[in-house]
Image (cartoon, rainbow, N blue to C red; front, side, top):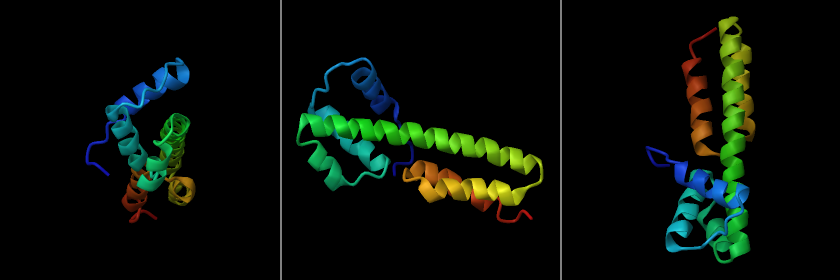
Length: 126
């Protein structure tokens, strides 16, 4: 995963195409953006390549990328909020469990790294 992740362009494309109904033009730039973003959300190059071979496949790929970003973001944000509440109450077991629950279902590497980092930070807590 790149050191600096910029999902602004894929979010903008998803907004234009999925929300506003603009057509998905499969230019070289758009295909590269979709392929790069697919990798960022743990979709294999092979799956992305197959999807990019048709307009319908590319549209489905865009939907899945946007879904993984949106759902993962909500999941980690909610879990972090609950984790902080548990930590403030001194309940580190429940705080750790929040991150374990994220790791049980999350596929997006960025969100997994956040949860793993939080678990590492709590390793020395009771």
